Amino acid sequence: MPASVIRIDPEIQGGVPVFAGTRVPVKNLFDYLEGGDSLEDFLHDFPSVSHGQAVKALEEAHKALMRDAHPA
Image (cartoon, rainbow, N blue to C red; front, side, top):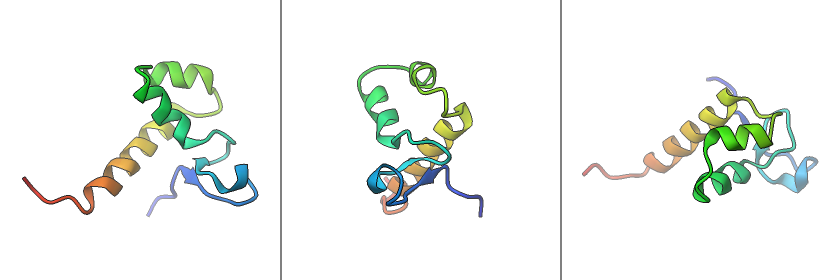
């Protein structure tokens, strides 16, 4: 199984989930998108996060949500 792009470590940002290899909280990505900003806006403001990392984090969130979902 490929490694997650999300890292949780009590030594980094007090254990807040961050993008692996950065100190950027994953929550920032969701805050940007919820606020109507684009993925490109987020990536511009947080250049230490790659496009691939951001997309993979969204995919991981989607899978986590859908895991317990009931089919329509």
